Amino acid sequence: MKEAESGLYLAPLRLLALEVFDKLNADGVPCSLKTGEEEKAVEGAKHVSSTVEMFHEKDYHEVIVIDEAQMIADKDRGFSWFRAITQANAKEVHIIGSNNIKMMLLNLLNEADLELHEYRREIPLEVEQKEFGLKYTKKGDALICFSRRQVLETASRLKESGHNVSMIYGSMPPENRKRQIELFNRGATSVVVATDAIGMGLNLPIRRIVFLENEKFDGTRRRRLTSQEIKQIAGRAGRKGIYDTGKVAFTAEIKIMNKLLEQVDEPVQTFTIAPTSAVFERFQKYYRNLGTFFEMWERFEPPKGTKKAFLSEERELYELIRDTEIEARFSLMDLYGFLHIPFSAKEPSLIRQWLETVEAIAENSDLPEPIIKTRNLEELELSYKAIGLHLLFLYRMGKRTEAVYWERIREEISDGVHDQLKDEMLNYQKKCKRCGKRLPDDSRFHICDACYHRGLRKTHRYN
Image 1: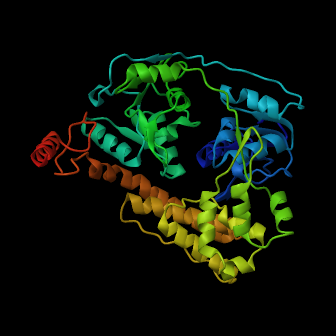
Image 2: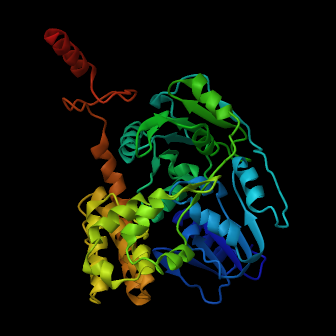
Image 3: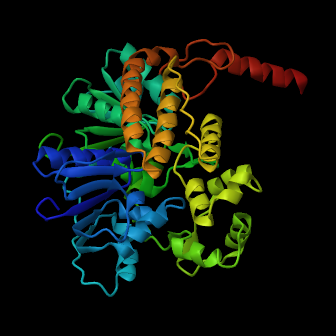
């Protein structure tokens, strides 16, 4: 792509888009950045690094690179990959993905002129047969857990044991993830504690991946990790010329987890479809109500080999504006565009901000400014998200001058997160949920032995 006259890189994450943007410019290839909440136009640039949702089929590039193509199966975002893969407007398209997506891609692109390159992992993985304990942590380890709180608790314990620690988790701003990665890469920290956010695209010199948990909460239920999830994370272990064998460790169920790691990937059988602009254009010829559209989408039977996007967040947001002046003032396409804006719709304050902003646009008044709070890490991270949502609207409305100002404010918030991380670890020491007593480093439970046995005695007494 670097050698092409023009190029487009499509990333699954803003952090990866930023990484390629930085690399191309550092290598002397002018490159612009375009994500939903950030745009950096570089003078003379004919290359763009972007998140996959920003893809537009009308934009021509000599070379397009689509990364993490297996995400086509994702129930929420998969359709963005389907659009990019099937509608890329380029002389040459490079599609990068895991082996289990191969047959799906060959079927989708059956009439295209294809070259297939398959790569095997050069560095072997070795599963340790001894259960891991935190006291065995060594330089180059990446310890994996599945919540922000667990990351901070674990980092706090390691800090007390004399380790310098980098942290990576999903709600951490991308700029801060980048800083944490840089600290580890240059040796300022010796250990990483991370969620599965480490599994996608991040390139780190990791000696050993340690799974502190074998289960995760997936938004609906707590379940065991899948074979693909284990491979995605474990694959970060090893770095040619530094660690020529990647090591993997577990705290329990070693045989079961090893079997999942070695399991042959099942081919991806279905991909996600979602409403297109053409669908809305046809729909609005006959109907004027998005509620009707959602009812029809619910009844719609997707073609074989596909699954339809749930659109659950879009429906929940729609209920806030149903039969209001907002719905009356916008076309169906514009209204759905507002519903489809990507933000953390589980945060009540962000939902309020979204609603107030859409109301302001409907009334043709100034957009409300995001609420900024900075007392602790959670407030800083929420403020970062609030500014991100504000930027999504500003760029959507072409208000680039205002966007530049808010990008600077967001950088200041990111600096605050970086500073706060050092202090916040102290607040996340693992304690008994009942009595507050400090729990041992290797405790897998949320209450101490004394409280557990007191609970047993009470149970026996009442029986």
